[in-house]
Length: 213
Image 1: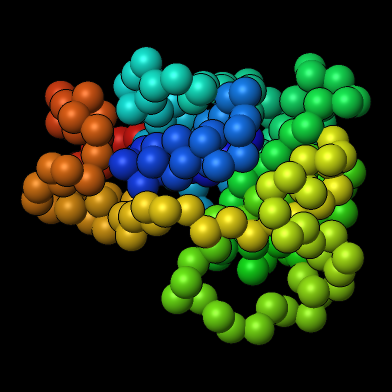
Image 2: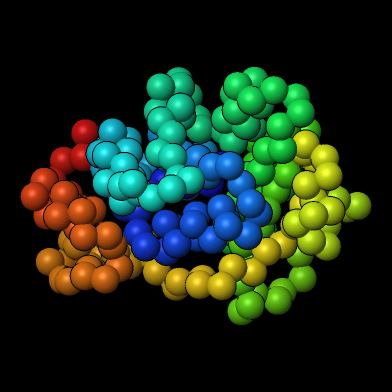
């Protein structure tokens, strides 16, 4: 599971998903747009549009799935609820992984029932070499005794572990910067999949005069 607002989905998201699929030898990676992310502001465009962009971005990429399960759920998009639905779908013995970026990881202790995340899945943090600051005390307590040294040791159990993984192509693409470029009518070429760029332009998404509702 790789969640996020995908507002909009860009090549950094998609390349990370491909590299997670390879590095962890996963059957599939579910990319799951959040309908109502609890710890950030409302996304710029409607959930259905973000899902459509995600599907266009994924195209026929093997192992990647655009998953709409959070869009049909009422209330905040809590990752624990999403993992619970995946666990129910795949059963108690499946090895489930939730991947998240380093910035999100630093706020993990603030998430809704963060302990439950480990009951349901492994957490894999996409590490960044430019982030070496000490972890917050609450986060250190939450992950104490959970860290694995490699993928093999992580995957010996269905859930409960933590692995920090440095992906080969960590692209420094910012969705915030992309929205600013789109709002200003500037080029986003080579930052988004071409199909995503075409859909955004054709539907005038992320323009300041467009109502996202």
